[in-house]
Image (cartoon, rainbow, N blue to C red; front, top):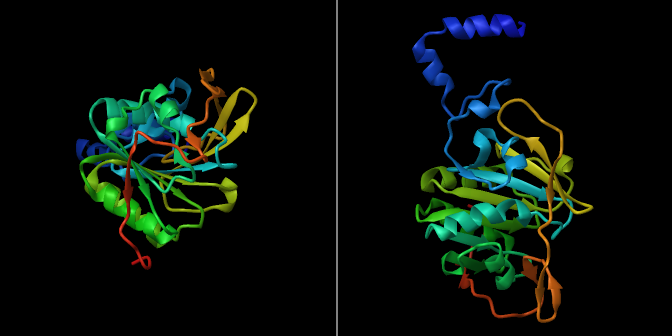
Length: 253
């Protein structure tokens, strides 16, 4: 079927069918941008052009796969997280690999009064904490870091939790995107390049787009100890983010 034939069919389609096609769970291969699912503005003009709806989906979990930890993956999320916290909405960080570096988050516009850092003792605890946070309507966004592969079952549990709470979930897993699989509808690969990061759509609802999007690094800000543009610090330091410990999670239910 060629494009003109499809257009004639769509023009003749009854209104009821067109309403069904607007459901976020159904998408056309040639029209990803027509998805009606609510989104959070991603804050990047170039990135918005390849995201369904132009932003990060709400009531859903998106997966971000950096080629290595700290290559600039949080560059994608900071504008959206800043906007949410500035609106008084709660954002949770689940098991980040390093202690969040508060000055860098503040410099990115994040209101630290609405940012909570959850420390966990195991991957299972992190999964439990993220699932519970996603179920809570008061959490506008939940970012979780995982070193081990997530099973399809656990991925679907996180997705169902996001649908219940209505917020935006983000799973960060280091590795090669093609070697990792998951049922999440939106998956992005991130790689560090000269002057910024290259973002590639691995999976999205609708037509594929393999062209990388370049996001330049912000100019580093000077601190008392020199230049620092990292969003996380491995050194023990005071963090303005509220720290919480998760409940022990013995195994994935």
